[in-house]
Length: 264
Image 1: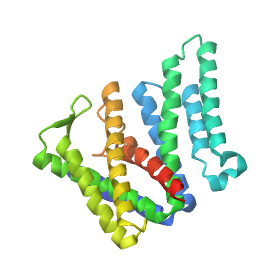
Image 2: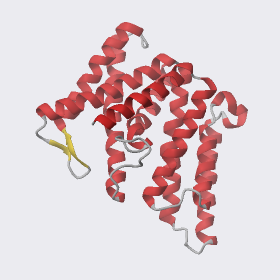
Image 3: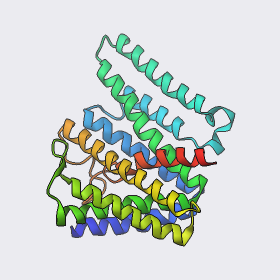
């Protein structure tokens, strides 16, 4: 626990100033985090990150992450980003033929899915920050409140397992406590910063994000259980890998970005 706290404090001290500053440093950090996240997934599958398949996935990931303001007319469009994924899929399908199935269809599909999972999540990481710092911080507060609330409510009141086949320690009571905690924090944040201009909107979005964040956490747990690993990586002592720390945000930020775009 001590190691976990120390790592969390150091990570926050390094990460939060970059989030506040934004701009090019934030983009660089996003690229680094996404690259490590993709490598963690490939290692779970037993695929070498620097193989042909890993390199193809990495290039596609980097193209997906290009922010609209730097991508010009081509990479700024959703059609172009879909084209990147389509090109990756067709390239890997051709690879299954050229290698006479040494590259299996399962591996090809895994790489495409991994790029979508990591790429879309971390693209929205930057996109939400670009829409507004206040929204990005809102998402962080909601996720942190959900995690902390779920932990303490689960320990105090947890009786019914939420999904024991995937994550044995999570409980229904903890999940509900996490959502309730997110609602309280969202209400306080709306009062202080007014990102949505409406308490009802702030609470409604918080409930959605909290639920999706917990789903993202469960999906990462399912990945690890399927591939028989305890953590996605070991880059963060006491916490595991990048995906262990950003699994909720990879689900929450795309949803928040869509909601913000709809509200425009």
